[in-house]
Image (cartoon, rainbow, N blue to C red; front, side, top):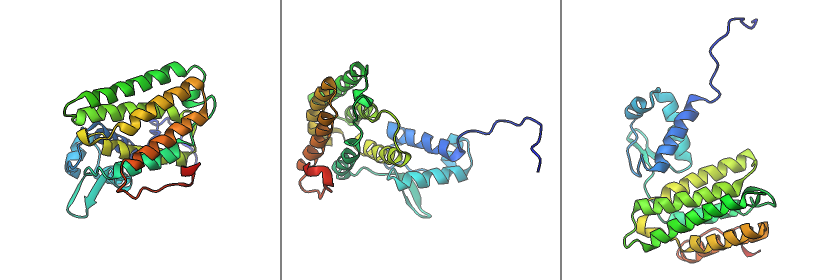
Length: 238
């Protein structure tokens, strides 16, 4: 058929299900939808102002990455906390993060040193506050995790292959959800040691030092959880 001449309303660049997914993801990671919270279609329809179809599609995507769990015909809820998966997620993500540092990119980009070190300082301050608290709560662990992921965002830098970027986002979101509300159960020791090494790498502008710091985070995380069978990828003993 010929293209109509009448100007139509611009088609949105993003599908509605993607917008719903992002809204739900943000609410889960911020804690507005806490672990274990029931996700009823009718409530989400009212809150998001959309039909059930994009909601169900978004929930399926979130279930696939471990942020939502469901029992068919019974309930759907935000994934419960499973502290035992946190070390494994850290190690797996380290295997991806260590491939990101390149000369002149991300944390090592020209002119990025100041902002990078400020982000590392904020993360170190959050770790120190966590350690100084006699009884760390969810807010304290969330501050540490939020600050750590702010550093990770700078680590990535530049353009990533879509598959790699999506994997980093999905695994990162799951780790963020699981670790952010652990309170006193959050082990900040490996992260604290890693921050000093990353800072030295940023000052030197050396991607090898940065990769070494990430490798150290993986090793310390696995060592402090010896009961877990943590997968050790091929780069482990490099």
